Image 1 (cartoon, helix red, strand yellow):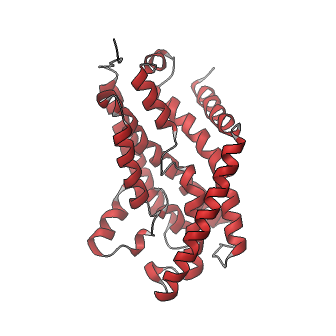
Image 2 (cartoon, rainbow, N blue to C red):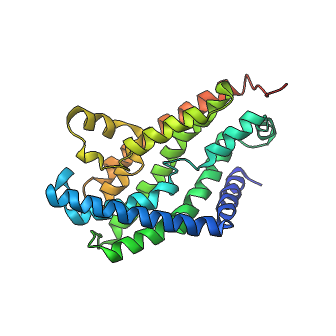
Length: 266
């Protein structure tokens, strides 16, 4: 089997694996829909008091909320991606088996995480988004090109998100338990991705900093492409630069980690 077919099979396996958890998916759809409703009413009250806050009108703000609910699990902003299983395999020493596979460790887990992400986008993200835009006045582009540009930005966001979480997972080679790092990454991701509020709302230097960090590639960047607030090419360059930097850093850290594999208890 060629390398391309191997990683495609791993991605397909990741998709099928998450597709088997139907009850969990249904519960996730319900949870995202309920939280979306709560956040929408909060945003509408805020935008009634401050029209065009962050450069968005109220319909754009509503769409932004439902995009957040659609991408929360897709990009594992609050955890739940392949990094959790990888950290557990590092802790138990099962990662030694992974290193014996005739496949690259990073590409294997990237493929698995992409399979998971595409399922979460279709299985858990699409329904809350559709429900939300049917229940509230929302901004939706009418041209297919904008939607295609948005999907490209989402794929790049998947790469950036995995790059961040892979670095977090590799920390377990030194810490043995990466739960603390995962918690810090979760907090940073929720705050700096725009999940709480659009990053355009953040004032002054704080806004400049958070918009320059890699987490802004996860939600803010794709949302601005869909809402017509960002040039797609510049957005791709920003996301692509962070994806290359993070995946490259992951490659270097992986090389350092695999030279000192420690199995707990032996």
